[in-house]
Image 1 (tube, rainbow, N blue to C red):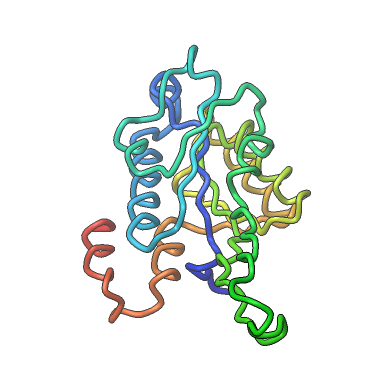
Image 2 (cartoon, rainbow, N blue to C red):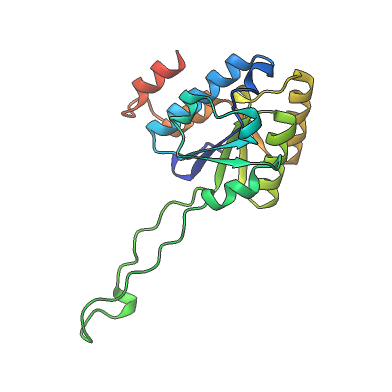
Length: 202
C-alpha cells in the first residue's frame, strides 16, 4: 500500500552531536534524515524528534532541528512514551450551539472539520538496534503503522543495524527509503512541490 501524505507523521530518533561521529556512514545517514525532514516540511507532514540524554550526547544536529515541529528529550531507549502524546492530533470538541430554540436541530448541524488521522509513523534514527528498534516495536504494540526509512538509520556497527532491520521487518514494520516516502507523498510529477523534491534528492 502506498504512503498517504494525509496519514503520515515522521519521528526522528537521536541525531545528536556527540553520537553521529560514531555512527557508521554517519554523514550519509544524517543527510538522508535532513532530506526526509525537508520533504515532509514541504508537504505539511509533522516532524517530531527526540534526544537521548542531551546533557551527555548533545543537541540534535542544528540543520535537522530547524526542520522539526518539536524536539523532546528522553532517558529511556524507546522514544514511544515521549512521542505518543505528540503523535495523535488532539480531538477537537464540537463547538457550543449558537442561537436560540429555533436553531437547526442537532442532526442537521454540520460536524466541525476533523484533523486527518495520522496513523502511519515513518521513523528513522540512531542507534538502529537500540533506540530505534525499541521505539518501533513499542509503537507497533500500540497499533501504529510503522515504516522505517532505512537510508536514514545508523548504528556504530552495520551488522547490528542490519539485524535490527530484519527484526523490525519480521515484527511488522515496513522498510522504506526517504525517496520512496517523499515520492509517494507527491504521487504525481504535476504536484506543485515536485521541482523542490527533485532539488532535494539530486
